[in-house]
Amino acid sequence: VKPIHVIGGGLAGSEATWQIAQAGVPVILHEMRPVRPTDAHKTEGLAELVCSNSFRSDDAEQNAVGLLHAEMRKCNSLIMQMGDKHAVPAGGALAVDRDAFSDSVTKALHDHPLVTIERGEVAGLPPEDWDSVIIATGPLTSPALADAIKNLGGENELAFFDAIAPIVYKDSINMDAAWFQSRYDKEGPAGTGKDYINCAMNKDQYYAFIDALLTSEKTEFKEWEANTPYFEGCMPIEVMASRGPETLRFGPMKPVGLTNPHTNERPYAVVQLRQDNALGTLYNMVGFQTKMKYAEQTRVLKMIPGLEDAVFARLGGLHRNTFINSPKLLDGQLRMKAMPRLRFAGQITGCEGYVESASVGIMAGRFAAAERLGQSLIAPPQTTAMGAILSHITGGANAETFQPMNVNFGLFPPAEETDGRGRPVRGGDKKRALTSRALRDLDQWLAQQQRQAA
Ligand code: FAD
Image (cartoon, rainbow, N blue to C red; front, side, top):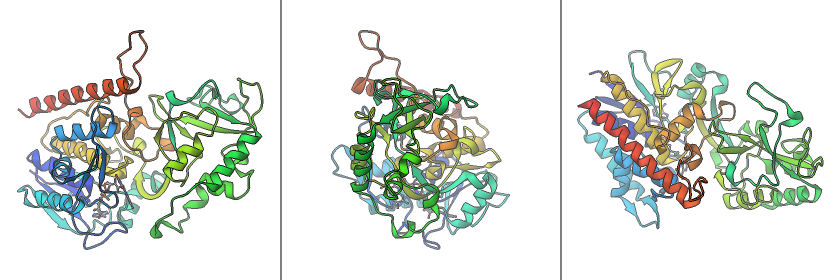
């Protein structure tokens, strides 16, 4: 059997390599470190954790990333196996001894008879005789490969920085204060004239908000992230505010073309939120990319009328981060539509985080191995955490505003369960309904694969 090539031995590439080898298919893993370093990695180990040593919550009943852990364990994940083996005390979270973790992943792959590890950069499009390739080169993909991907996918479809505006769960927005309306009631190709959720401010509220923005604590850029041309194109709101108190009112908070139906007044300033996923459960705050510290974001953004009780699916940020416009470029099996021999996995697909990246590695590895063995493998259902991530990055997310995203319950179809009065369950009951459905559906997906293999 011809080998599959995996480029990048991080969280996603290590997991994909393991899944392919466990399926009985030979695999060559190309990792450029230590021949060529990145700005963040410090070792030559595979699956190096570049910053925090936490895989976040391990609660599979009430937390979406905890659910993802549970699903990955069911998929025989190498990352979870070694994470569990090298866990350190961290309350309800799974945190790991980073060196022991990375060493054990490296050893497991090194010792696997079907795995070959080659150290060296793949500095351009993979050679044509590599007929099945998984690109898992992460947020710090080497420039030569990034340029090749950009040329293939199109100038605007590969980003080198994320510019993340916060995302809010729609059901946490107070619609007694906010309202649906597009500016001038405009109807676009898919528009209804009521596409945005608007939150109005009067003059006092606006100036108090600007004050809070300016005095909030911000995170600093890393040395190697600073001085990029990125800033002018996609400026954080607090930087805009620092250029003058009216700047935001002439930018993302301009109040034109909108009337607040609750008061019949023209607002002084408006924050707009736009639907972010096909399910309509998530709304992003338009133009609100920010480097405020997370705790400060929740404090300051809750000053916006209508968002007092907002629950955030994602907070804002700006980082160096290489990722492709997956909803546009990839098919449902993570293959590049323009060149199907190339699959993508990990953070370069626009998922965010160690665990999410590894989970996309599981899926890419299984898809590639099944294809090599002449089997067809359907994608995990969207009701599972893995399927929810996959659906989001390969179609559910809005390609125009696509930015990296952690797993969260907003990516799942709503739960069917209702309370005693026939209303959809909420809070902890809703999460329990979603997680138990996910684990049941994942079991079915795995059982299907076992039947196929037999
Ligand atoms: P990586 O783990 O980065 O692996 C990619 C691998 O590809 C690397 O080993 C790299 O050397 C290799 N590579 C790149 N280009 C080539 C090439 N051309 N040829 C061969 N090999 C190549 N996530 C969290 O969950 N928690 C955090 O605290 C956190 N902090 C972060 C801090 C920083 C500074 C950065 C940049 C990212 C951080 N992330 C964090 C995101 C984190 O990087 C990802 O979650 C995760 O590492 C992504 O996994 P991956 O496999 O996609 O990429």
